[in-house]
Image (cartoon, rainbow over all chains, first blue to last red; front, side, top):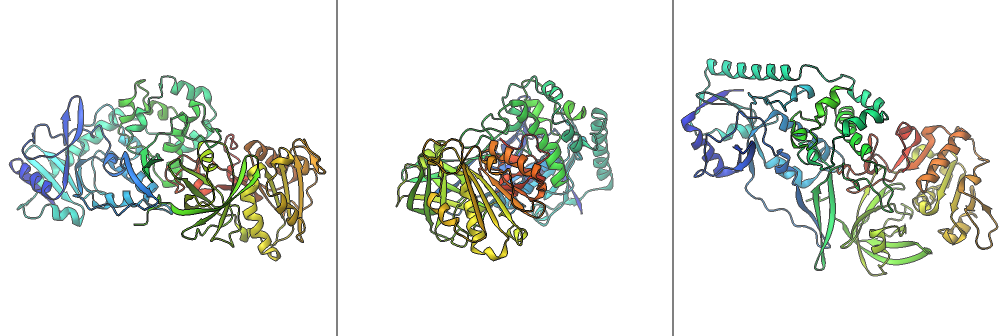
Length: 338
Length: 271
């Protein structure tokens, strides 16, 4: 695919043009981290734009798998959701896409597709961005990912000193760069991008040199009853669920009904398998009443069933879980010891 | 929009008192629910939420569904305040039905405990509807006391059906009782079918399923011929929300009926 170059002075114009057709979200530096923010031309501070930094604190699932959503009304059914301005996520990282892959498996590829997720996914435009500066918390190399995107997005963006390189991936992506008089990138610029990518891969390799056990799913199955191991791994957990709420691949949700006058409204919210009542059945029996069982269940889900059933780990290597963790439980140390 | 979260309005036609805490709800959904024996539905109790239940009526009759339900918690408590004429919601069917094709030509040994007879009734009625396709049908059913037996009248009728053999037990008989006293496994000391070629189907409280499974295995039933109702917290029914995970399975999509062969490696599969 062709790679184009956009000089620094024309970046704002392009962003403003994109914002005309979409709810444009950009990653910006704020406090100690990077956060998604809606792009407003008047307020935008390009120095705060965080395209070279690692993923935002919030996983992109927040835009697609809504944290709280009304999914049904009763007895009269819910009307078709109105067509709003679709979202454009500018600067999606390679690790973000792992979450997307998990959710597509879970929400779209089974017998029943979630129409709400499906609609938003179709409408949402994704512009990927390289990740030239991996941090200590990054370990995407261990779960089979790279610090840049090549597909699964509409455009791929790479930041170099003099501007942005943009690689067209999809037809929709090609439309996004129409009418700006884009110049094809020079070979020198592309080499620069490739060198940056290689360097980032090197950094990750240096930080996380030891690959995961190639038989990890099997080993986890065998070690399921090794309570000593799991108790040690979980000993600093205070059951705050921060790890699961910030996880880009977690897909669990809860449905609940509320009476609204003579109608019933059904809401879907994110859930977390660490919650004590999560697996409890009517009548009170609970297969994972003990926390240690719920702790192990998370590893089963992410590193055993995901890989066995879908061919990849349900983990993106983004490091949000231990960044959020009050007990500083580093998931790498646990899976690295298996 | 094909919205899988949307329940179909369903009217209660009748409520039958089976035991002091078990009722059969006769339901007429606005649209036919194309279920097969073993599959379940999510029942909406308006304002209280949803819970999974397996129809207990024959899948050859789908316009009117029956569900036999025990009052155990919040949702069923709310359901028990409902009367004929009241509105409920249903979505489904979900999960995998009993593989009746594989049952053909074989004896079928059904073991039920308490309200666990409800989903087995759907299976039993489907089997007797086409009884020539199958071998003999054995039904072994245990309840706590004679008062706790569901489908009392129907059991008497079923006993008259050719090729059907029924035996009952109660844990304790606090009123005159002519059958066996003891947990349901006391009916299983002699299994009158060729265990290598037959099918066993079990549904009941987890502790009962655990001991019945052991008894069936000891008797020589192969694990792949023992069908168990593994009902976990099946919340969405769609194989998505994660709540009903049992080992590698989501019981809402891979079950709720799983064979012993499928679950034998799971640590403590029975709650």
